[in-house]
Length: 94
Image (tube, rainbow, N blue to C red):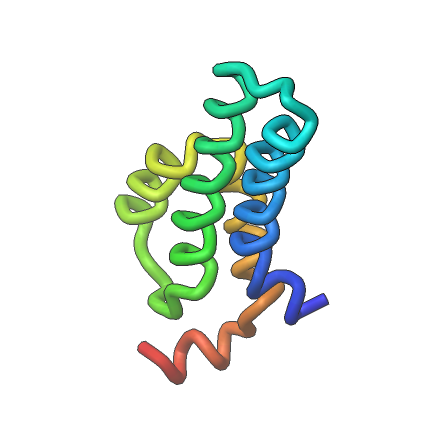
């Protein structure tokens, strides 16, 4: 579970790529598919950066990340970060 949490952002990116590739292969590409795929790829990238950033962060940095990650994905990535790294690992880095 810990390894899955570290790569949760990459999995979101792969889902976004699936949203882009499957409609292309079936010939049913619409703007909606493209927008959803783009948002998932970008959210996955930022989520991967957030989860693997070993700095603990303060309330202001968490609010900024929440704005960047669009609140709901932030909550998912926040708990992924908590699962992926122990407090001892984070303290050792800081």
